Image (cartoon, rainbow, N blue to C red; front, top):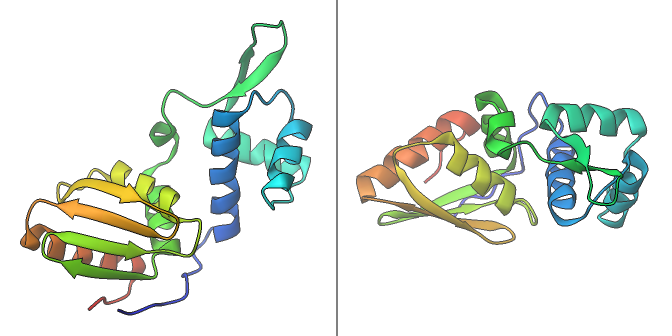
Length: 167
């Protein structure tokens, strides 16, 4: 199996990871202010200024809605996939894939620790007909394709995105 360092694209992979953490926090916690969000992110190992959080919230399509207690809280848009355009999905995929191993109609995709979920979500949202489904752990994604031929086609498409050749 080949293992390569993550490729740096036009967007810093740390920003991608921070934005993924923002989505997870907003899904899990009733965040009422950018300061609360910054505190939650700090617990997850991310430092972000108010300007950075404002930009990230806008780019993710996260807005505020009235809460049941009269205050407001941040919420995700209808679906996160609506916000992530094709180039962002490809960046997410290309920045974090370290290797791909084919086993029949299955592909094992390796990422750095903590990145498999985001890459798996991005792969699902690409809508490639070769992908029947994905299961993500911490650093590995199991991609199920319908046939071994589809698995090879999937790997070729990933290779085009990452500009690497996988064995």
